[in-house]
Image (cartoon, rainbow, N blue to C red; front, side, top):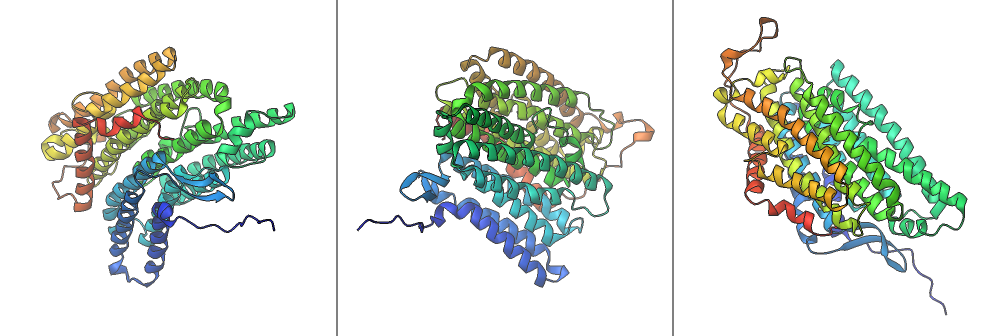
Length: 510
């Protein structure tokens, strides 16, 4: 009597815990919002923060293991969800970034600037999708996770009711992301038609030996369209046009969230489809990503260099263009993976750089949130004399900017740039390493220019028509101070022991 393979399988809930807990707390917050009176709404923020902490702690039982679930019957290695080292590192980055965003948001929501129930539900929902994406090992789950992370983010950007900048930012972000998703879905459908599978491991195997030249053409189009879709998500030039206006129009905590967690989502998806799904097409995506990396870092740094310090929101605009330039650096090791025999090893440099960038960039946005409390225009000139008003905050921002520039004492920024540079050189991409070196020099100017502003005397400030509001010495809200302190402590610890991050650049995560 022949045995029939069953389609029913057990679910590894421990492996699924990080995204599942985040989603559960999102629903709990949404339901609790219906019953809590207005005076008790701040409890929703504490509940959301507790949920993110628990989701982060749920990573601990998964350390050292390769948990898998939702696998094909009879094929235990072909799974839709894999909690390997790559997954755990990116999930930690996502949940830690969302936690810092929550701390930055507590005061804004408490002040009534944002509707509490909707805000916390959307933030947790987006974080749940972002935590699911690095574990996804089939194209369907990958696209669903990407959209679960992106759709709430549109609403978060436009959540400030009656704010024209916020509405315009949300619309631009929505339209660009919808276009990216449409292109990506077309590419995924082409790949499914050509290979007959959605699982990345099977797609990779099928692409090595397509029986019909017409299928090979279809698969090539699918690979190209999928890469274009992810180029939008990662804000790679020339698909970066939505970034500056979106960051300016969004609430500051959400701008920081998009700059870190949004990038983690885009880059982890790009790594999975290239290294896991399309290794046989490395001759196509390797050069394409190298060109995108060079273009992205150049466009981002040159645009940041041209920012007028007297322009309204120039501080956020500079951070936005800086994030585009940093995206170019993050693309370099992924491009290098297309030129080496062990691509899974090369992407470790991107993960190491992303961990450094997440800590210091969210810290910079936290300081921007402090300055915005007394100077809503958030010009770079509003930071003049910050050291004399708030010395610890100014020192923290100065350190974050030096880390982004890669200058001592921001040792972790220097080491992370060296690992990315080494990845390009080891792959034979000398021209890309030269372009990166030039861009690092360009970036030094605007990072140092902003840093020097912090320590100038307030009496050197601007013309009458652009005069800033008089400085206030009101106490910094505890959650905001905690976020800055956490980011600063993490950046200092990593600069003192860079091997904590850089060890990810020395081993294969996938």
